Image 1 (tube, helix red, strand yellow):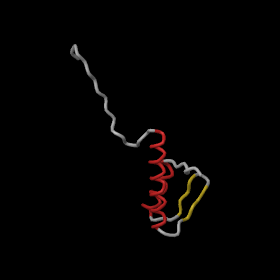
Image 2 (cartoon, one colour):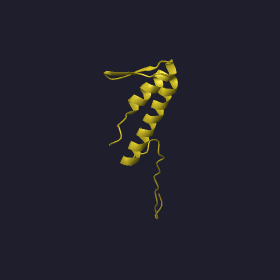
Image 3 (tube, helix red, strand yellow):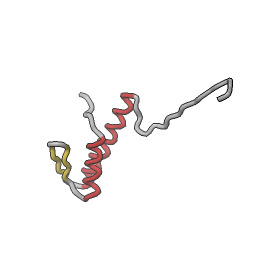
Image 4 (cartoon, helix red, strand yellow):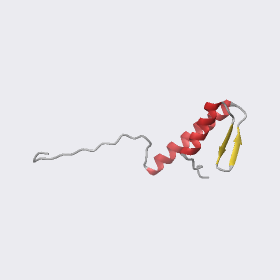
Length: 76
């Protein structure tokens, strides 16, 4: 069984609903109504976990610090 694929847009829609105090979230043509705020928060945690797992599988960590090191031996 594969892990569901999530998007940043889905995560943002869940967060926006939580901020507005709503329990109904619409993703494109689908609408989900959560029974409680705790259930909505659990969905946010699940989507965040899924996004991090997807990033780990592809080697792309969101917000990973990037470094560029330049080494020369004749001046720069």
